[in-house]
Length: 337
Image (tube, rainbow, N blue to C red; front, side, top):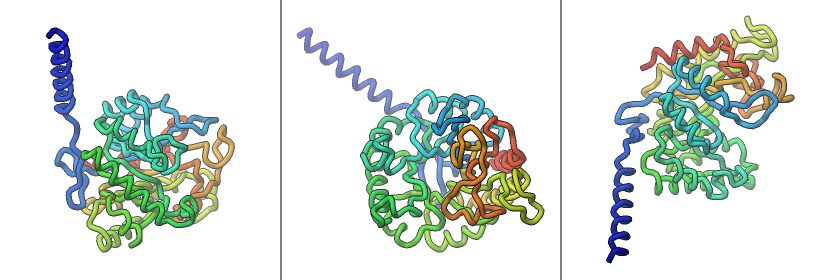
């Protein structure tokens, strides 16, 4: 009899704990028409791509997170986009406490580290699906440029993408799913990736992405956002009024035009995660110094020299000094409610 009472007590406690967990309040994330919604209000992404790597390293490191979040809040950022899952509850909690949401990137083949190929992405979803920092699950980053990663047939990626999106929806009803696609998706992408709720677009059309929105209206009625857009602060060649070499003015002018075009079109576009928050010294040469050069798909559209210069994209230097573009982004992000 005592044993049965003990078991009953455990059952009651378990039920109570489960009920308490279910009654916790989380922001409700949804899609309505062309809009991304948070707690039934239209949410415009004012974001940055965030992959902080210290000098001399090629590994992401959040040791500078507190300072970075303070700078993001000054900038007016409400969303960060990351390329690899963050498996650290303390990091997620600090981002959430700063009032910032995360577009959580999940890759196809990350050697079994919460990736789609191994199926371990679902372990991550189940572990963090109730964390209030999560805005969207983002599957892949412009893989449409890389059929060679999928046995030479991009359809293999779209099948894997759609299946993963469907599987996530079976375990998480509260977070829409996106993918970062390079440029405007074609009919094949739309027809095979029907489970995608919000399309992320990595776009480099010089300093004028506004030509995209009418095209989008004609091919999709789903929400979209610019998952990457922006300019670097190095001119490989002199062009127009911009001199060769490090050139913060060229970056600031280009980003001003990009954000102006993007944020006046919020009836179509759910915002932007500007590339990038901080310079990335690990991408083009010696990790201990800042090198020009590097390569990226569609890079001929990078203003104003048609060259990406991968280590110069931050609105901040690697030492967290503000570039000219910082005040430009702050102007647009803080004036947009």
